[in-house]
Each structure stands twice: as structure tokens, then as C-alpha cells.
Image (cartoon, helix red, strand yellow):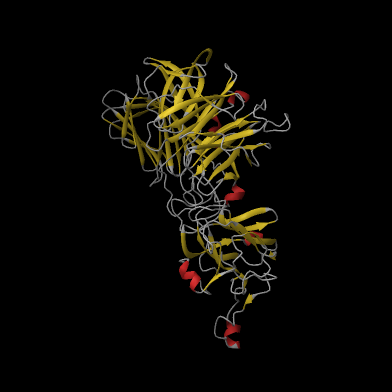
Length: 633
């Protein structure tokens, strides 16, 4: 455990300009317009921890200095005195908290190393009981320079807290040279105002940076988002949970599935070696679990698997998902599997869990969400992140089928008894695009308008040099329809996209001759396009969408290098174009293609090849951003 210097009043230890540079002459000083305010050293740990109170044993040995730094392989400490929780190895845990100080500079800079475990091995900036910034190492004991932008917090009282709650491999944190400054050596990553960054999708959900750890930005940066979890509708709110690796469940809420407010993460790693993998959230209206002391407040219960894939746990909330408690009886189930999908099966009055493991989906049932029985009816040849639900066929509530969608987007239609799923169709792609993965749908939808709405992680989206990465597909309504080839699943954008509509250009009965190109929009970057078409055999119609092509024939969709056939004939197409994605829907969602796309040009145009093509109708809507202007500007 390393110790570091503390100061009684953090704003009392000032690095003067004279102490750092040769004195200027009076004439030179008069000639310069102004200087940045002097740095204020919060702590460089040269004189121990001072009056920083401790909990636990992680920091009881004081600072790491001298030869101990080499023994612990800690490098890049300018004063060779580091607050470290590693002096007695990775086992001890504890905290070290600074005295209160006033934020009086634009940035707080620091050096940090140690384990890469958010909120577990970290340096936190706290105002009152709230963590406003947090940083961790990158599984390296070389101290790295980083900083937080605290300009909007100036004048507020704050404390710093160094935290080690981990006991496994890399279960330690190293911190040095914490300074209030207007000129940090390493500026925070910034690509523009939040949600107004140059490449930020404007109507596809992306994650913000709650922990603000700007070290070594890359695929594990804090703006990362991957598998969707626990999508649920509850009391007028749509909840979106998603993984950031196994570190935590991100959490956002919306009233219309278009305009999102990202809350603080629902919960972080329960322990160092066992993070929070994918899972489900349910509302236990009848309090079958007994987790709520008040039946008027049914618990929201989140099911998730630990990183090792063998232990399955729950966290629960009694305030509509704003705060979460870790169930003291965890793990509730031990099986070598993961990705539990849980829902209430009304016909048998039981909870059902579909869980992936060893290439199969396993079906379990429970009366109380806490004890589970394996029904021994596995679904073979399965692939991660299951979603199982019931839908009417052609909107007829008297004819329903169950739909099973796998993590790779393949779906099958069948019957579910409550303990066994019987497939009645081949497995087909719910979407033919290359970036459609770990799809989930919002459930508890019967308490809303009844629509089954789906989204997916658009895996492979890459926003280089941005403080975020990856994105979520635009929500789509799922429906079942009888077709010439039997019952099929259709996907269409939800009608709420219309809340973003601005200017529209509409045209009818335009004939495109072979080789003719028609520019329908010359500028703009966000579009919703709906068209009905007539394409004769041998002809092609290509949409050039800001440099991204989509080609239709009478029988096929060609997009992202894949050609996909329709059942009968292409008659309609709908397109959503954002700054980093293109989603295509043919014949009201008979085929959809979700893909990462980086537009390289301006304008929307259509071109015919191989024969005349008739555009029966086309409406080109320019879209507003879904993010609040007050945040973006």
C-alpha cells in the first residue's frame, strides 16, 4: 500500500510561478497580457497521507517510496512517492480520502496506474455523496498522466477518494501528483460538446462518458457500448441497459424510444474477477421474490451472469431503476452458462429463464425468481443472447406463434409450452446486415401499447478519435405475417421516427431512364426516406446515400456487399441514414439490413441501370437530432 502526502487544506499548497521558472523582468511581465493561475497541489504524497482518513488496510503502510517503487514495478513518479494499495500485495482493500477543498481551476490533473476496474480500483472526485469523475489504471504500473475537466464545478467543495475494493489479480491502484491546474500536461479527450461531436450519431443511441477515464483511449474507452441487456417497458418509460464490456450495465430511459436520457450506470462489477455480463430485467408485480417490503413498489429485478459464466446473480431496484441493490443471497444459480433471458409465462403462472451454455439454450422455471428448476429440454445449436416471445400472426390475437431470436440474429418460429420450445420453421436471418448482433426486444410491453420492439448492438461500428464507440440500431417493431412461403418475421422502424421529421421533399411517378441520375437532396446528413418503386426484370435502381450505395432489382436487395432475395417482388423501400449507419427495409420489413456506414459525400441521388425504373412515390425527410440542443451547443 503506498502512502502519499496529504495536505490539511488542499488549496494551501501552491506551486508558484517563481518556483518553476526563472523570474521575468518587470518589463517582460508588463508586456505579457496575463498568466494562467498558479497550480494548486492537492497532494504529491512526498510527506505521507497527512490528514487523509483511511478505511480498511490497503493504505496502512503509507506511501511507496525509494527501492519499493522498483520492487512494485511502479514507474514515472516525478517525486518517487506514490499512494499505492499494493505494498502488501493485491489482497488488502480500503480507501483513502482527502480533506475537503474548493475547486478553483479548470482541470484536476493526476498520475494513475494499477488495475483496470471501474469504481473498484480507482481515483474518484466526489461532491457530497456523488461521484462526478472517476479514473482507473490500465493493468499497468507505469503511472499515466490524465486530467478531468472541472470548469463547470468551480467554486464547489469536493473531496478525492482513492479506492481499492479488489483482491484478485491487478487488485490495486497507484496514484501520484494530484494538482488543480489550468494547464494540464495531458488534456482530457474532447471532440466537441457532448452529443455534438463530429461523428456522433444523432438518432441512434450511443454512450456518454460517465467515468471520464481518458487514459489510452481505444476500444475499451468509457464511451464504449456493446450487448443490450434487460430491455423493459415500465410505467411509461422504456429502459435500455447495455454492457460496457463486463464492467457495468449502462442505463438510459426514454418515453418514446427516440429521445434518450442516460442515467448513471445501474451497477458495476460485483467483484474484481466476476463482472456483470448480459442478462434480463423484469418487474415482479406480485413480489414473488419478496424483494420489496411494500407491495405497492414491485421490484425491478436484473439477472446477470458473472464473467466466469458459472455464477448467476440478481440486482434489484425499488425506485424504477434509479438505484440498485446487490442481492445478498447471490449467486442464485450455479451453472456453466450465461446470458439469462427471463420472462413471466402467464399460461403456467411461472417465471421462465432461457439461458445459453455449451451451444444450447437451457429452459428453467421458477415460482419466485430465486430458486430455479432445469426442465431438461435444451434447444440445440444455439448461439448466445436468446430472446423468446409471443406474437400474433397478421395482428390476429387468436392466432399466435412464439419467436426465438438468437444472438447472431437468426430467428425461428414455433410453439412454447412453458417448459419446451418446439421449432416449426427453419432458422432465418432477422436482419441481413453485417452489424446486427446481440439483439433484444423490450418486454413487459403488454402494460403499454403491446408492440414488440427490437434493437441490436451494431457491432463493428468504429468512431475513431471520438470519446465514444459503437452504437445501437434504431428501434424496430416486429410483426408476424403470412406470406407465399409461410409465416415470416418483419422488421420496420417504429413510427416515433416521425417526431424527428423536418423538411420533406415528395415526388410521384418519376421515370428514370437507363444511365440517368436524379439528385433528390443536395445537402444534409440525417435522412428518413420512403419510396414505392417498379423495377422491371433486368433493371437496377441504386440509391446513392451520401456516397453509400444501396441497389434494388425486382427480386433482390444489394447492400454492404450482400445480395438478399425477396419472396415475390420489390415494391417498397425505407431507409434511415445517420452519421454512422444505414438501415434499409424492403417491402415493409420483409428484409432489413443494418450496417455501420460512414458517409463520404453530400446529397441523395437515384440512378437506373439496365432498363427504365419507375419511382411511384418518394418522400425524403430531413431529420432533427434526437439529442437536446442545450446539451450539444
